[in-house]
Image (tube, rainbow, N blue to C red; front, top):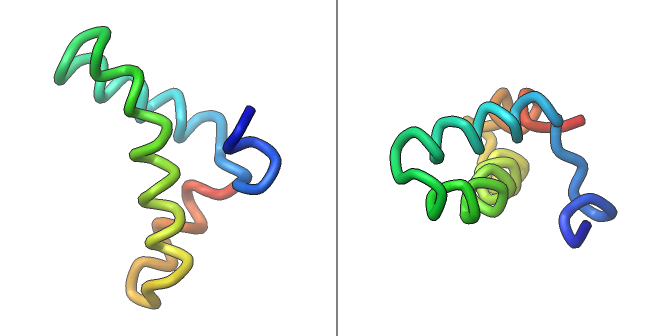
Length: 59
């Protein structure tokens, strides 16, 4: 809810991120998955070479 209003993330990308971190670290890895995905989106918005990442992660 905190990320949903100001930062629009692609639901499929969030699901894939949660599944990836869950497979890597188990249940504790699922909790930081959304902030990690959101960080990649923010970096993609500010670094020109990462613009495709931001477009993929955006809604």
